[in-house]
Image 1 (cartoon, helix red, strand yellow):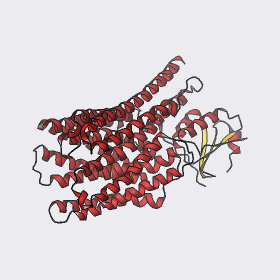
Image 2 (tube, chains in turn blue, brown):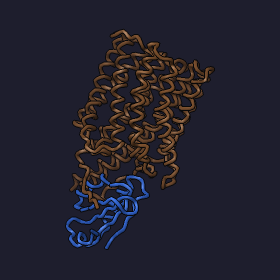
Image 3 (cartoon, each protein chain N blue to C red):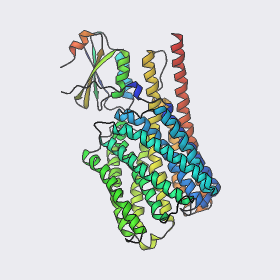
Length: 82
Length: 445
């Protein structure tokens, strides 16, 4: 299942806060789909530390789309749109 | 479709003590400036060549603005450009200590006239800025794909190098090390490169990133950001020899004075665009940083109008005019913008370092990391904004009614700097508390 999170209207560091909060609520087999205005480079080391995988793609409604899932969750990984 | 997995390495971000020491020192120098204004009163505001005025100017330019800008640059290079300043801890310690000694000795040199203090100031400021310029230049050169912010930073550093070299030359002449024949034009060129080059270009370059990021505005148009950096820099490069030629009696004064309107027009374009972008911001909530920036942008336009009045024959030789321009540029534009940015940079950094540590310790739900508003509450920053605006107004009025307004402006500046210092210390203390809670959690595992 996809959990959609639009952080494009939020001021830093609220997007990071919301993303970190949302990650805690992801169930096995689910992934988080984040809509962002900028590439959230500063959150990457935190995701790395948390054992979280991500893909950032330029595009989407606001400029960037980020797909986030647990590294060991192959079911969620397979669901990420190509 | 491009896929990005690039990451900002944690090791790249400097320890929080690196920028914080510069930020906390800035209002302390502001307090020294306030004390000077309180003691000397009208003497510090009636003639730009008076020792008290020179001491006051350098306490603000080097002590307040310089400290904030050096600290911010060391912090922003890794964050905005992914290129850390090499050996950032020893570099920050050396730069901060040398500049602090240099600023104190320069201001006391101006006030006392003791030559030895000037020599100490020249050595320490020269060495401090040399280390800063070399270290930041290495980081800037390493960036493979520079954007307009990086171009702006590079040109700002080149402007700083020019300002420092001119300052050292003037200082050497002032303290009798060398003879100096063109004191007035060289001082004006030093001032021009310092304000329109170093301060202005760094503010412009950084604004390209931080205004859209923190104020949720649309991006600056590329048609503006690309050429503006280069136009500002190139026009200053040409202005300096024109001004020197006036000093030598080879050109009439109106030639460099008309020419300088080119970079000033560039800054007006920047200010107008920033105000326009702020009007189009997505979240229309009142924000203290936004109000500081708006003050700065409006004052840029006011400075242009003031500059234009210098062409009116009746106003031409008014000694108040350059002083008013100085006050508006330094306090109205530069101090407003840098002060406003501190209220984003400081809580953001504190939050970022704490959040990073929390994630590394996996202590979510055990230790609460405060958010930006908890680290820097609006009611405190708003109070300081009002004190800052009152100071700007009082300084302006003090030029026309120096007694007793110069003393009162000193009091107001003192209040504004005290509030700024307390706000910064409050955020630093909150950071330390939560950091300690995280350490306690780590020890208890």
